[in-house]
Length: 103
Image 1 (cartoon, helix red, strand yellow):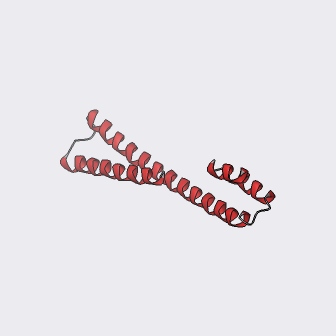
Image 2: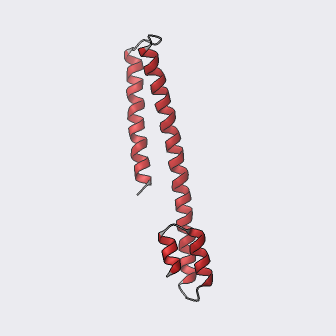
Image 3: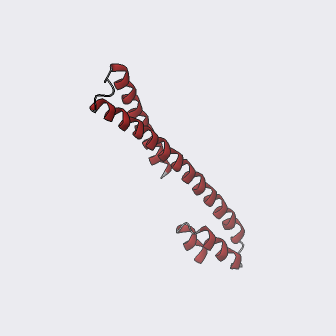
């Protein structure tokens, strides 16, 4: 039961320790499950970090362009505005991917 509590808390180390002490035939399959869940969580975390990085980069570029336009350093041409719109659309798509990773 302690192992199940640790698994539900995403405490992979604690779950493995509890399963080592267990003298139950389910200990081996549960140990495998812990390894699989731990790997999935690591992959999801890495993917989320990559998406956050992409969002931050796109937002920084958008901010720099908008500030340049407001300061009169960049002309708000149709092409530039369309590129900014496309970047915003890309950020929305990235946010959807990030949300999907969390569930």
